[in-house]
Image: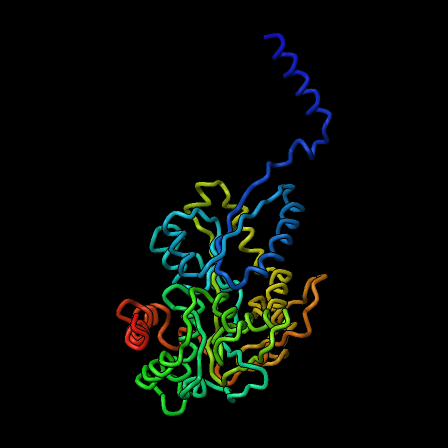
Length: 365
């Protein structure tokens, strides 16, 4: 007994010699981030920035475990028991699934950014010189054009791609396929031309990079990532396309079980900081922070800097990559402009959805 008493006294004495700051340092904490595949490289840069920020603010080290796969598959994994603290997914319905499962609070998007971490656009990637002259949606459905896009049954990115063309037709930007009925016929023509349906956006674009297909329907940021890595293809903007909005949310049930709510919420909020948004921009994502948008000349409805007053930017060491530009398009629409996600999910992608039925019919699935 005396032996243990002596050891306890020695330990207490040694601790007393440590600086007060060291004695009060909280133990390290671990978060799990479950994301969709495409922005992995952006998070590889943002995570160390957050870790530095949190250490400076609290003295606590944060370890962040990362999991990436197709957005729909990731959402189902979380709903099925993957105890992630934060979900960064491709589309709102994949977060809605977690709300419906009782894992995420219904107010997850109650902030100035609507719960959206970053934006992008559905665009085309074509072969060097654009040999088939693919410049708009009507060109994608011409006879003999091989289209690459992921599978909307597993990929949120695929759903954005399909809605990009569907909405452009519905809104009157695909000659001969205008309106809701015309948009349905457009989907049939598109499905006929799809050569490969991969499970996620990253895998789909790699298929295109391997030389398969004439045009890839993909995210603007995915094309930039490939071009910066030396890819040989061209980026084409259709005149009408959908704004991709990528949501992020704290998984309330799991952070409360893990005792990680404070740091998880801080991480999500950090994604909207100027530096994190600059990192997103350098990976081809359109930032949602108004300061960074103004820096890059991105304004709503064609408004100029004088029309959108924004606060002064904070000092930063992150410089914008001059090889990345975010030009406006003639008609940039959102899911709300074509009925919203609940309608799209049911009418286009559900078990009895329009595109689901067309794919089953055209491709024998």
